[in-house]
Length: 432
Ligand code: SF4
Ligand code: SF4
Image (cartoon, rainbow, N blue to C red):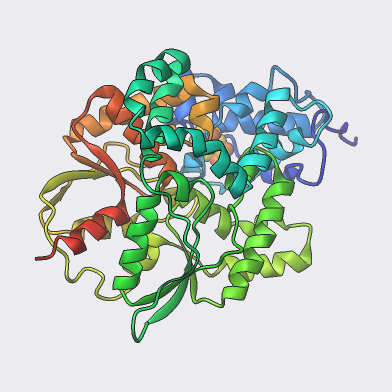
């Protein structure tokens, strides 16, 4: 008997039934899923979501308003992949499912609008800069303090993230391109992904990364033709825009002829290492994407591969903890590198979180589109942070840093949130 066609799924990115069927229903993933832990509902668990997607593919249920909220509530944190003994590619399945919904005739308006906004704002630097310009101007006149009460009243649970973003706009943006550093007798030539939102909201991460790479003897370039990595678009189901951005980045970085492409945002790095997934139906671009992906390195991964990175460090007398950014730990499988960096800093006391690799609730746009769940997940994380007594909370992703910065302010903790490389840079600079 042949299965009925899926209702509500369309386009070239429909999830593969064999991927969905690789789930053996063991339930090992359930205790690692933040949304299942929060709701206790099987439908908000990885296994439940796979069951829903499989039933749509079999034509047994429709992708409709009763089903899609459970898919939308997924953080795409991929903790379930780490827990899964059957290697179910959950991240790919969820991205495909969202793309298949957005490509279909019954796509919810909110999903389509989200994809449209990402395509036309985040995917285009000039538009993004123009959209942020009024808020940036307000910070120049010190108006963010006056805006805080209004933001809290108007945006409720979304306020901490928005306040953190507003605070971040007070810093001078990072918009440099071309050759950024050329130390004499460079040991390697690398390119930096400068990204879309990141240069605008977390420029200090780029400045710190650049100083660290230059100090370690790397020539650093930022190809001017590079664009947004496309991660947010892929997560929101706009696979076409993600593919378009991926092609443009592959061309831009290929032309730069570098030894490695360094990414200090774990979400972007994971997306770029996984560009081949976007081209599974396109053999020409698949081969190029595979060659490109092999050159992508997370900044912590690259730095710790350089012999002597841990020499010449000055003291930082503080208690620090590490939030394993989901797309570093679960998607890229990197846990050791950020810890090696922190443990190398003299004077720094590193205290582990109870659940360091549980999502903080940032998850790209999630804190803005799912504010209740994002806040619930963040509160758990803040409890964990508070119990360590950390004064510095380190991450490897700008979204996590902003989410934690917002949470720290709203809870009134005496702490700051930074990227691991910002702390490494501080330590090099603290050498007397
Ligand atoms: S990606 Fe995260 S939120 Fe989504 S099902 Fe897996 S563990 Fe749960
Ligand atoms: S751990 Fe893997 S195989 Fe087991 S229920 Fe979860 S997704 Fe399915």
